[in-house]
Length: 120
Length: 107
Image (cartoon, rainbow over all chains, first blue to last red; front, side, top):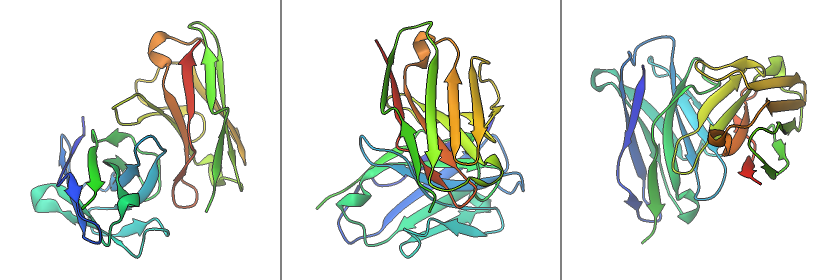
């Protein structure tokens, strides 16, 4: 059973870069059967897809966030990461890592989520 | 961007009743690339349905999905106490977008 776990700072200052990591266990991060993605959910609101990556590093980003987002993968550490630059209070959200079979697809495995607050 | 509009915003029902949730897309969703998720407070979303009508692994058969094009429906045939939650639709035919959610609450 695939398991995903997010980690990273819970507080980020405005204009700085938000950085999160997702550690994969119970399955291979180099499997061609999975794409690895990030989704966020502002408090009390709905879900927003940020983007995804596969084991070879091919990335797919939400056009509305593309200019600020970088998703990368480190297969040796069984991790993939999210960087979001120039954050504002609007980026405060629970950030989930998740996996699905295609670059844009349903998401069948999810991490528990981590709250990131943007505040000075 | 494909915008998904879910209705109603809140559905008040009793255990044992049938729930019908709607998801309407601003343009046709190719190949019925639509999924449904259940989310309970403090938890990550849980995949219920993909491909508009295929149940995910371990999902009870009281959950069913239907529809094509721009109109999709999630039906819960008989509500169990654990089914009261927020439900989201998601399209993945053109990037990925989610609906705003429907809350199913106990009447």
